Length: 67
Image (cartoon, rainbow, N blue to C red; front, side):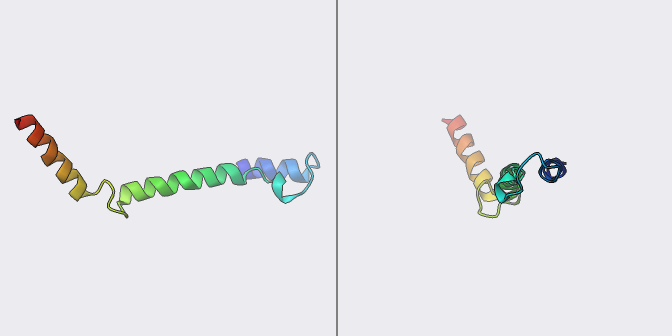
């Protein structure tokens, strides 16, 4: 939808037709970064927040409770 609005405003003559008038690339890049970081956290590609990490943290918290 944003791309359609951006294209309409450019080709309707309300903005000059230059590469920087495609403002839709900025929200698209922001959204892409968000989707990428979410995918990495969900799929645990780098092992960050993986099952092993979760198990270690649970054991650590259980040890703290015992003391």
